[in-house]
Image: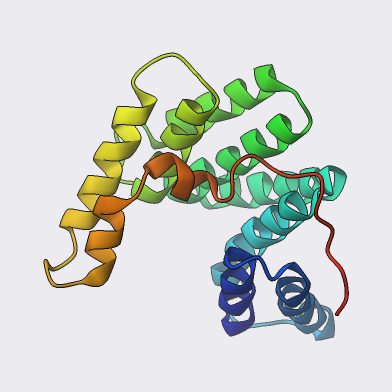
Length: 187
């Protein structure tokens, strides 16, 4: 699990090659044999791999990883992961220049979390919908989720202030829509 967390952190600061190394280490561990509680880390790994390939501009690999992510998420029936999986599929569709499929995936994700407690997925899905110009109040809904997350933290927590000061679309979508000009390079 620590390799996945490290890879996600490295990805978050733009360290694509080091994120890839962390995720590759997990794949090596997978190939060596059975691992206890494998389901706990498979979903974050798939999310990380899909996001890594999107960030690197490898849309084909991102599609492959996001399809695995969707399948695994639906196997769990856990609404937050299902919502995040469809969010990822929407980002892949947008990288493929398929806005109609992006809208469909956003709607699938929103349907999966409707009426349920899934703030991370709700935030990202609404922010992506707003960033892509989808009609409705997605921007306000994304901001409401961010406020809810901020208010769940103590007033003295610096992360609370970060949430309150942030533009939800920027945070939820990451560094904008997927780029095609960055590649994962070995260092």
